[in-house]
Amino acid sequence: MSKSCTIEIAQPAARMHPPVPAPVAILREIVRRYGTPTYAYDIGRIKTQVARLREHLPPQVEVLYSLKANASLGLCGVLAECGLGADVASAGELVTAIAAGFPPERIFLTGPDKSPAVLSELRSLSDGAIDPSCGSGVTLSLDSVSELQLFASQDRLHRALLRLRPDFCSYASCSAGPDSRFGLTLEDLPQCRGFLDAAGVQVVGFHVFAGSQVLAADGVRHHLRSGLDQALRAADLLGIAPEIIDIGGGFGIPYGPLDQEFDLAQVADQMRTLVHKAAPARLAIELGRYFVAQAGWYLTSVLGQQTHLGRKAVVVDGGTHQRGDLCGLDLRHKAFAPVPLEVRSGALEPTDVLGCLSLPSDVLVESGMLPPLAPKDVLAFPNAGAYGLYASSCLFHCHPPPAEVAFEADRLALFRVREPIHSVLKSQILSRNAGLGSGEGT
Image (cartoon, rainbow, N blue to C red; front, top):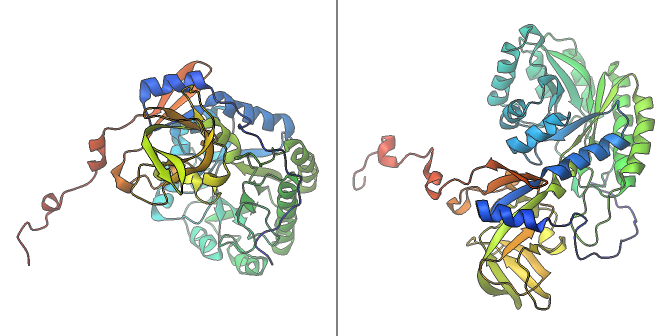
């Protein structure tokens, strides 16, 4: 079976600017107060996305925010206050979700990381519960027979979903289809029967996720419909009456001039049908990029001029070490050009934006149509709120992380302090202080 599928869709007319216009005045104020490089998050935009989803989707659907998209504690707090649940995939994301205010009973722990650190955090939640014997309250997604066996042997009861590897093709840019590494196949399910009545685990449903950044509504509908069908087949095979089925999500956003807008209304029609088909089981969907990508702006200052591949170029104080979202979607070629915060006269020209790393591939933009730029000019990169800082190789060149600032209307809130350069030494120990010999050699 092929890893991915394609849908023939009409290409929209190319647009020079992203659908969400740059709030230039507030971004200038953020730069004035906090400098660059900085991530700026538009809280109003996040709330708009949540409201849009609530307007269209049936109220029976449990909506989870996937922290893998952006685990900023401040942003997670906003999304928890909006009434969403949380999808986490590590001990760090779990403690962030708890600190942000997501109730344990509305947290789904997915992904293959079931390390001792994860088990320890689950036990801590269980110890703090009213009835510790009932477990942490968190719903687990179990990725394999091995994981099911691990939790079946625990002395605390865990509610769990069995994650199924999709047996249908994926339309996602970031595919997790039948060729992916995640989940149980239907052939694996008979091995699960011996653990379904174990003291340590209660299997309450299934989890199917086929990939992310899907812009075609037909592709998303195919994923959701096929995921539910596969889960119901698995339920029949195991003789389980599921309480909840997580059928993924992956709603995309337009990163570049040729990307279409995602049609939520079409998906909502499909969801209403699926809610009735799944009943009495509840449906859940997990979304990250859809909530936060368009809310984010990456602000970086021009350090100097350069040339690259025969084109004009500028070097900035940011780079790909802080922009994990540039990996995988070819955004350096396909994304909207950054917005200059200074007003300068002059014709737009194809210009490359180069990062500050000693790395040939540290290129943020190729052939972006930009006006003449000078040192200290600031560029605001749109659609930077997902898979940016929290998917980045921040330790490269020992740069401290950028600041994170949120804004809503004309109010600013600092979410992450810009640490001083010497903070890169924090938590490290010099060899002679670590007990190693300081002799001249061996």
